[in-house]
Amino acid sequence: MTDRFDDADVAAAALDAEIDAALAGGPSPASDPVVLWLAATVRSDPPAAPSARVRAEHARREHRRWRPARIAAAALAALFLAQGVGNLVNGAWVARNLGEDYSPHAFTEGGLALLAVGIAIAAGVFRRSWLPISVAAGVPLGLAFGVLGVAEVGEFAAGAVLHLSEGAAAGLLGLTWWRARRYDRGRPGEDEA
Image 1: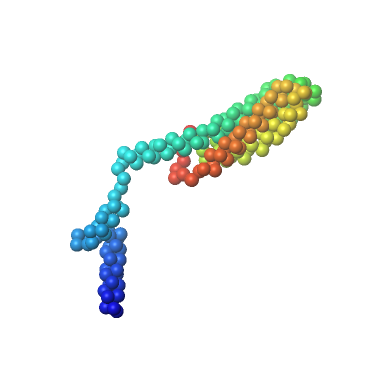
Image 2: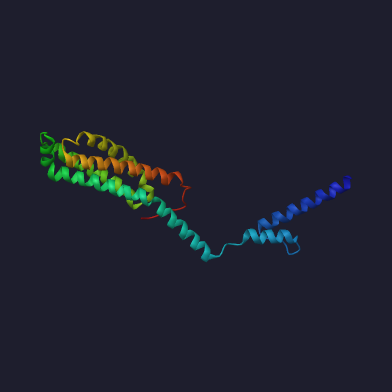
């Protein structure tokens, strides 16, 4: 009984050595046919054409999955950029409609700050890896402006529409980014817009 166990142990060790040889660079032609088959199966590369089609389909689906977040970022960026330009160019009209005193210094600085935030939000439109910047810069500020827009509903209709639109776009950006990111498995490379 001890001899049978020793023979089986020796055979297993020999099979292990063949497998190690196959993984290290190729089995000898006298190897076990199963080892030869496994070594050939493991080492074969997939055909180039199907691999390219699979990669292209994966890239297309990834682009489609992130498109709503990029569109929401573009909408929110456009709203902030328009508000910034409005503060720079037409601040006196805004102040007059709000019933407040016009301060050119405050409206100029506020307009420049809104332009900077709008550009930061727009970054996510061009590269997917920049979308977290868009979300971090735009969602909290957009939601805050949305809340402020509720108070302007009876006071200044144009401001209420702008701020409520910013709040809605910010909420949409946060939601679409979270939804797309939730199912992200990571990516080997950067995709461009």
